Amino acid sequence: MNKFLFALALTLAGPALAQQTVELKSTVYVARAVTDAQGNKKNQLFAPERVLPGEALVVMLEYKNNGQKPAADFVINNPIPSAVSFTGVEQPWAVVSVDGGKTYGALATLKVAKGDGTFRPAQPGDVTHVRWKFAQPIAPGTGGRVMFYGTVK
Image 1 (cartoon, rainbow, N blue to C red):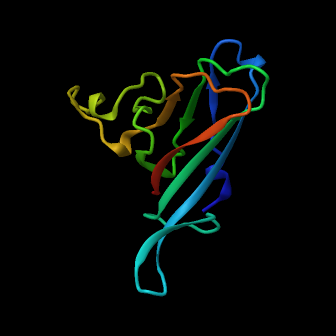
Image 2: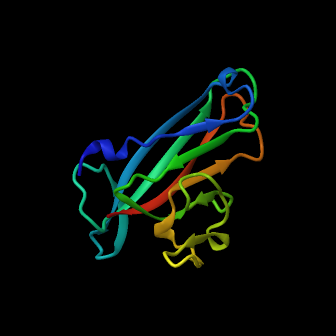
């Protein structure tokens, strides 16, 4: 799989964002089951040097406010790459879009239009974007991470 697949486009939003200095780092990992010396299986994260269809991915977005002031009304919008099928998100306060980023909500509340004009409940594979809207300002010098999960199509 080409590395450009993982060049995730991030959109930041918020008032006076140009004056805020929040650094973002996006890292993609492949989650593979490994067996330890005692015979126990567990998932381990690896760099995505080579990935195969069906393999599990973890996309980690680390953020840090390097500015002098709190970063208020901070939002991260992350499109899902076309070669990735969304499977979930770590933070329960994240919302998703199934219409190319036009509208957002909890997956259980979203609908997808069918060819006959009716609607069906949205499924994880329908997700096109993930959004994290931070309820609290990010204090200067602090940061954290948000994550979503997917599989290679």
